[in-house]
Image 1 (cartoon, helix red, strand yellow):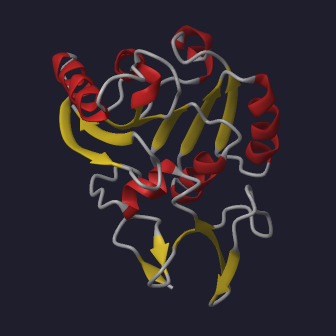
Image 2 (tube, one colour):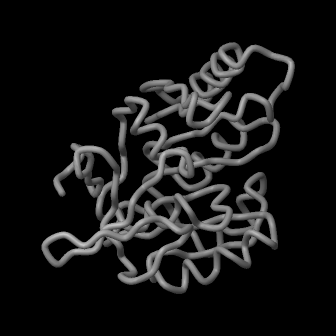
Length: 216
């Protein structure tokens, strides 16, 4: 097991892993591997868009051990738990709107003290601002229209410095060419004052999805 070149991300030469911050537990049935006394969780690219981004050649990785991360669209905690494995001295604020997914998210957070769950709407930052004073990174993965504007609203509300935005092109316009959807999102983010570092398409692991990496 050795570093994959990104902080907190490891590889055995074939698969990606994060160091398990809740040893003995898996979140979504992922493999647990022990190497030199340390337990790692396999980070599956077909189950996590952030892992797919890394596998697709993404290079902008703003997560560090002490990062405070606002995670919008945490669902049941699959990717958010890997982020928590990386930001061991930081915090992952997990926002999820679906009560059903939130029920699955809560026990994942209970096993990891640096994960804080909020049952809230990502379009309404005031619903969770009481528990989030400020963040370094915004990570967004939500399936609804206006994804870039929702991202910008949260980025500014919590004074973030960088972020990763998953664009689900079919959630914006099912009839439009995905490449055009990604370009429109780029324009909106730049108009909002952010620098777009890269846009990485996640096909075929995540069809019609792209990751947009930004910073101030």
